[in-house]
Image 1 (tube, rainbow, N blue to C red):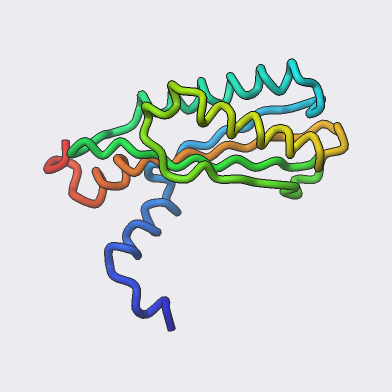
Image 2: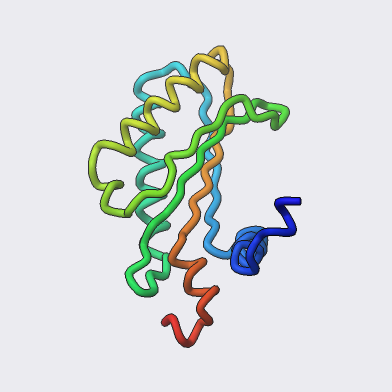
Length: 141
């Protein structure tokens, strides 16, 4: 029954996300999850990708928040572990917080993978892009 109680805005947001509005995804190969040098390099690549993606976002009415989720898949595509950094402001990606969280997650990846090659998947959701679409493109520009 909860489905029938959802507001039309919630349904519209779900449709937009399913259609890929505001969603940016990418993957990275991690051949040796236990290697500290590779972990540090991948952490930097992930944060750099987030920063680059945020530069492409719309920010209607100053809405610039993002949600970041990461997952690790084995060679068969099975998700071994995942995390979400929650809803963050872009400025936080220029401090140590998200980098430390990404690095900690990659430590978890090393533990669950048994140091076997894995694929890392990143998904970034721009709440500004969603707001832009919800409010009508011309009005929110």
